[in-house]
Each structure stands twice: as structure tokens, then as C-alpha cells.
Image 1: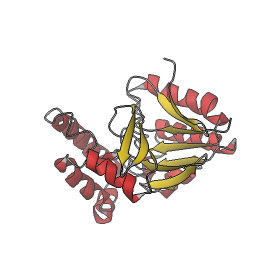
Image 2: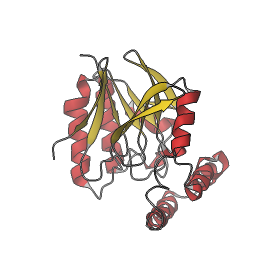
Image 3: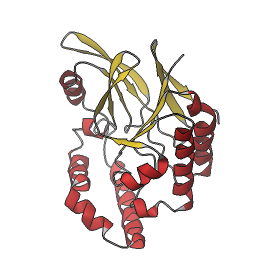
Image 4: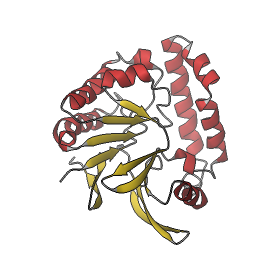
Length: 242
């Protein structure tokens, strides 16, 4: 049956070769059967600019996605909070198309709202301030104007600071805010919502203004890869073998 695949929060990095192998196996063996592949953010653990695309892992990931598109599977790439600096040069190298967050598609006859998911976490005020800073075009230009080695060092420092701050926050603050989910569903015509970011894979049902809407949360790839497979009959979350 014709189907579409969704993944997010892979956080690919040279430090986790097992997960990298899972991604390359997924791209070679699973994804070619799909009508399309959507990557809803955080493909990489961090991204310091498209001029780092020749990094061995980055180049290998781009090559795997390019091969997938050559096999006739369109690849759609959405920014996450870790790889917001991915640009047109890298997406062209992948053969992928960058899409906005949010994006609405016709998913085998069902209206579907695609998001990374971080904009739904409105209770995390500290993170939302950082997100606004990171998405500011002037701040991005200033960062990208620095030497590659400097950017990498700064990014690693920010990652360490972010990991430390997470330990001081409650799990509820880092999850989506129900009111933000309802607003997104209402503003987009009560669709099926698919997102990542929270690392809490699950299927939820929301009743908004008497409309029943389902929300699929994609899993992260820290311990084991997974994907969402959707066709005309619905969606199914599938874990990859270890």
C-alpha cells in the first residue's frame, strides 16, 4: 500500500556510530519503499553551517539521502532546534527540500500538520527565549561569519549548557503545553498532528471544539531508531531492530 514515512530527533553524531548505522540501513532498506520521507528536525546533534558539509559523517548522511531521492523517494527536511542552521546548500546536496515549520500536507487523504514540536512547549519560557534568539536572521549571520572551528567550539559549549539546564527543569515544563496543541489544531483546521522534539513517542487523541484529532509524537534515536508509517488506513509507529 502507498505510504509515507516520518522521522525526527536522530541527533546523528560521530560519537554514536551504532545509531548512524541504523540510519544508513533505514535509508537503504526501509525508506526506498515509501512515497516520501519527512525528517521533522534534529537530523544532527548539532549543525554549525553548510560549510561543514564535508565533515565525513555529514557527507555520508547527505549521500545516503541523495541516493534515496535518486531512487524516486522525495525527501523533505524541517529544521529542528539542533540543526536550525541547515541551509539550501546542504539540502541541495541531499536532494532534499527544506519545508517550513509548521507545514500542512494531504497525507493519503487526511489533512496533516507537521511540526518539529518545540514551539508547542510554551511553558518552557527560558527555551522559547533562546529559540527566538537562534532563529533571528541577524544572529545567524553573525554566527556563520565566524571561522568554522570557532563555531564548532561555541556550539559544543551551548550544547553542554543546554544539557545542564535540562537537569534543573521539570519534565512537565519540557513537554508540550496542552493549550498550545489545541491552538495549533484549531488554527489549522483540526488536522492529524505529527511532531517530534519532546522525545516522548506516543499516540494521543485530543477533542478540540468537538473535533477529534490525533497527535503522533515521533521517537528520538538516542538508544534505538524508529519511524512513523502512514497510509490511507492510518499511522503506525515502528521501531527498528537493534
